[in-house]
Length: 268
Image (cartoon, rainbow, N blue to C red; front, side, top):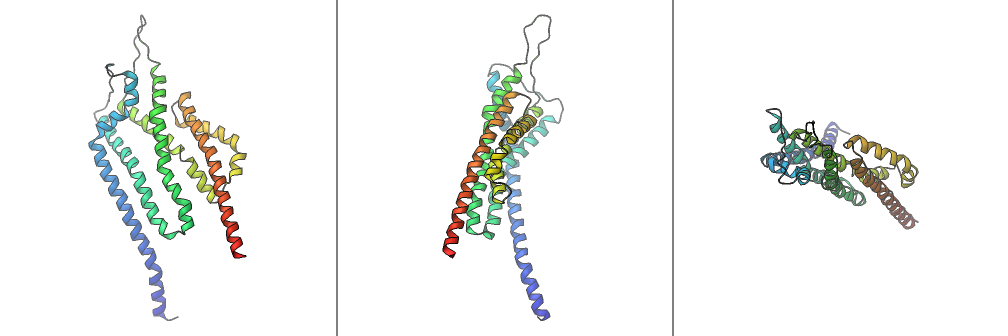
């Protein structure tokens, strides 16, 4: 092969890589631009978003309770709203980022690979939202009511013990619960990916079911507030998703075997 032919071959090999890098850069810029837009919008409506996140606590106290939230540093409220805007923008950008990832990798996959992976990309944000909704609408009201039950008042010769929540600490606890429940609800996606990669199968999950129960409640105790309600509210759905994962993996394995037999019959 001549020097000119070697040079042309080298250029042609570099061209697809350069095209992919340009495409990746374009999609990353799109995600960053959308995140920046959502951050600006979220910061503009930070008070309204924070009021929405207060609702589990507000519903317990009632509209005429006269309760308040406090901040004890001059900068605390500002940085709390910055943190809230960042969390809100990340939450809103997640589906867009998944769409961009799919558009980037899908052209390089076979049809059967696209068919196998597309449900996982669709399920990821849906499962996260389901976990976040469970945390916000079910767990938080129960957990907040439990914690507020430790208030004391009306006893003689004592000082009343009442909650005056700091806005930064309240937001941190809310975000922690939403992230904990949202990420734990991604368990079926993780297990299905591992199954498709051949790392685990349905029988493995069945064999380690007892270990999974212990691990789930141990993790729930670590990432939730120290009350039994939150731990059970996270542990039970995760175990249900674990069992659902076994069913789905069984189904995908059976479908894979059917396709393999069909291809084998056609080849013979």
